Image 1 (cartoon, rainbow, N blue to C red):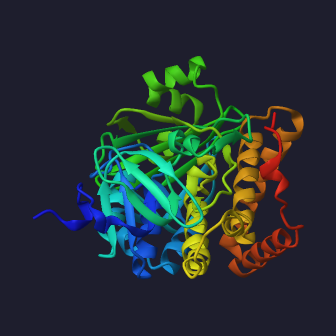
Image 2: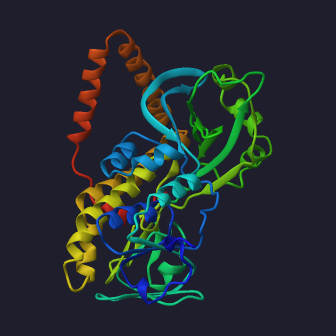
Amino acid sequence: MMNRRYSELPTSETDTDIAIVGGGLSGTLAACLLGRAGYRVTLIDRHRVFPQEFRVERIGGEAIEKLQRLQLFAPLSTAAVPFDEIVNMHKGHVVDRTYGQHYGFFYNRLVMAMRSALPETVNFVVGQVRALRIGAARQRISILGQDEITARLLVIATGMGDTLRRDLGILHRQISDRRPLALGFSIRPRRSNRFRHTALTYHGDGDGIDHLNLFPVPGTTRANLFLFRDPRDPWVKSLHDDPKGMLTAALPSLVDTFGDFEISSRVDSWLTDITAADNCRQDGVVLIGDAYLTSCPASGLGVSRLLTDVERLCCTYIPQWMTETAIDHTKIAAYYDDPEKLDMDISSVQMADHHFNLTAKTDVGWHLRRQFHFTRRHILYGIENISPALATKLHQLKAKAIRAKPALRSAALNSEPMA
């Protein structure tokens, strides 16, 4: 018998409290939280088995803490490989080491693990949404070849796809001309059974290379390379043709430090436009994750930002909205204006700008800032080895200085694209 969650034949029983369109990471996480809270949730996605796609493949730090707080950590632990040390390099030398909880995974396997955690109150519908009609009291979702689904609230979690948003008059406005390029591929050791380190991050030096991440995932080691270069650049084409040769030429001592390797998969790439949704404050519909604001993959904030969206929406606003007879645009606006969400969104945009400047600016000022940045890290790492207590105090002073900065303002999301 077919599992009810994966029914492809929705009937009148599919009328639901909340319909979520998009069964990737953000949509599935939202469905888990809302289903656990007892709401009738319908999660709609085109794919019964999520396809293999090159997306985020490593998380740590704040994202792990948020998953644990939301009690969504268990599926991650079953689909990922943990590691707690990263060697950091710059210009052929080890700068320092990062310690902390990190996990490497394939995106599609993580999504499927999260889907396996969906509670029984979530009905999973496999189908392609072809039309939406929204209002303060009821949302209508038409699915190709299936019956219409009605819901009190519609959550759009379709990532960077624009078709459904355009149907509602929601457009994505480009807020930065900087287009980060990410490449991903698998590697395996040569002349050895293992690499010298579990994970390594190699930072570029104003050459358009932001950084290279090498880290374990189930069954192999992944390489994620983040660039601020035009994908038509001959160097990028050569990178696709000979990734090992280009990397070892651009990143001195990579093989000596990490170990010799060979490429064991195709090279996937993803070019990101940094955009934000316009005209999204509408009755009965709300956007989360990349459907609202895209993140620079080099910053590493994408998962943490989407978790902020999911947590604020599912734990604060939807419980309020579900007690009302209508969910109009004024209620929806409170979610977009939530201070915690707004700070995270602005931080994401500003971090993208910072990564571009640190990676691609070649003037004397940014050259000096790069050198100061890595020299400071190297000195602090030396202090940690000599006096951990002093290093802790220095970290605390730095954190205090960051907290003392003026509050971020929403103008960063409403500005013209940055040159």
